[in-house]
Image (tube, rainbow, N blue to C red; front, side, top):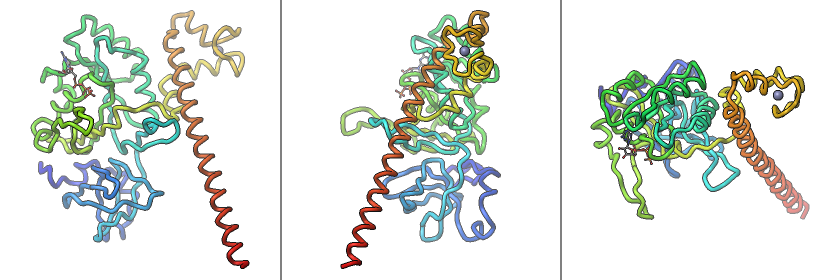
Length: 348
Ligand SMILES: Nc1nc2c(ncn2[C@@H]2O[C@H](COP(=O)(O)OP(=O)(O)OP(=O)(O)O)[C@@H](O)[C@H]2O)c(=O)[nH]1
Ligand SMILES: [Zn+2]
């Protein structure tokens, strides 16, 4: 496969995107996938190679993974509707959302089997994946450092019987091979997980030699920290596209009620059966959730984590909604001031 000029399909092009483009656009415009985003330019890869495009007007934000149509003057004409999108709360603020990565097909939630192992954290990542509309796969790493890997794997499987769960030693190439079934033409992959669980090791193993060639080197940033600088999106030698944006690693819950509800679907179903519609599931009579806990069908841990994630996302969602309302109010104020000033100027 030629990695420098991959086909659209190798870049992740699917009927879902094809259907959005009309014949006129197909004959006059080029199609590219965003692989890098800078303040003053957007880098896309297309079957013709790489192009640096001028960003779109500010109201139409584009992010890594998006598909765009552009013309011969390197102007972006429009971006296509996304199949999935990861967003996060902008770091250091409570109030704005940042687009992180679009059109990922499979997200590998990486969690190590040593002291870092946490069902709560896995549920949190599952909620984020489901909110983004991306299929999650669970990878439990450091199996070689854990004596009860199989028990932990079963605990994860119990969260959702449909989940695919792997336990691996990231340093063992035979274990890595299990994951290669996800590396096929057109499949866009991403990794999600806390620091030190083995994501970089996994990425290096999957990308192989190409990673080192394309500049996946550790460099020091201005503060003397080691950072990995490389292209956010790359075509894997064995097929598939790896989306490795640093922002993915700091994802927080941000307005993801849907994702939380889907991750804890049995709890939301039980809640419908509680006698009172505003049941808090603590000590009310006729509480279907407490009954399930007593009967051993639901763990108290899971209920508490569900409630915690619900509260957290509601809080984040509320501050975002508040920001939007404020922005709108400010916009109106600016408009009315401008109108008043225009009226004033006209009148005099
Ligand atoms: N024994 C063992 N060590 C592992 C395994 N996976 C990763 N490691 C080691 O754990 C350390 C952290 O791995 P990284 O791949 O850097 O973790 P990361 O998730 O990329 O961490 P960040 O770069 O901070 O996000 C490295 O020293 C790895 O060699 C494993 O399955 N078994
Ligand atoms: Zn209840």
